[in-house]
Image (tube, rainbow, N blue to C red; front, side):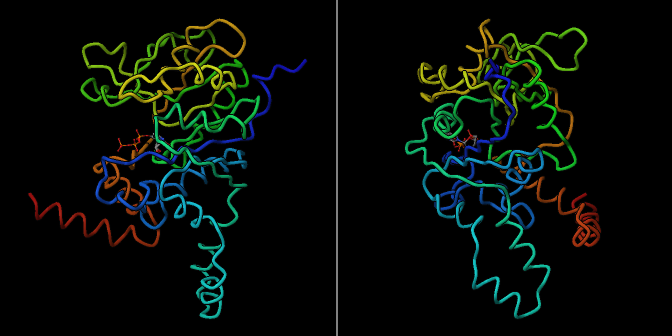
Length: 301
Ligand code: UTP
């Protein structure tokens, strides 16, 4: 019998139903996942990352303002015709590219009762197989292959995998935090404990859980029995803590340490940095932006 926890991974779930309160008032009528980073909404980078890792079946968990998200990945025949008639080929291509990204599905969360609750909304679509979760406001550098590495670790272990990033001690209280142990002969770690947003002095390590997960289907059963935790929300971290403590099939949590660049576009400062850094590297914008930035910084000194 095939182990359902090691079935090939083809599906990605992207939670994008949060209220985005840190970015108000911009997020009053627009999901934060639709805020542009240079010229693409944050969510597009995330869907592209899933598709690059071979996960073409994408389920987006949406909430209020669902339409903007759905519309962005849909065709706009009148716009396409106009761009075509005007010979604006590059712009036309950029529009068409967004329609061809994977096989997108949508389900609503209703009440945003936490990330764990959002992931649980994917249960019927995902079924009894492992799957990836990519937070819709978390950008990972396009040059990195973090998700593929995590998929490999999941297939090897049959457990669940989190992405970890070392952060300064005074920042750990903004994240889920993991205590880890080495696994002999492997470059990934075993996660022994997970705590959501601990106080700096109580954190078991400086390893923060960032917005990429590859989960065994057992997480659904655990989430169904996970009561609201911190902030009265159903926390994915709490469900992962249960899986980390278990010893049965589909249990066990492993960590892949990420050392590349990552931006939390739900946080204003990180969002601004993402725009500047990514624009400064672009062929069409980089040179004038870098020149202007140098003058600007010199003026501030
Ligand atoms: P965050 O904790 O960053 O989202 O969730 P938030 O609650 O919208 O943010 P603030 O703190 O109010 O500014 C991380 C990801 O999980 C999704 C969010 O949309 C984001 O992509 N999420 C969060 C849900 O889909 N549903 C929820 O109930 C909570």
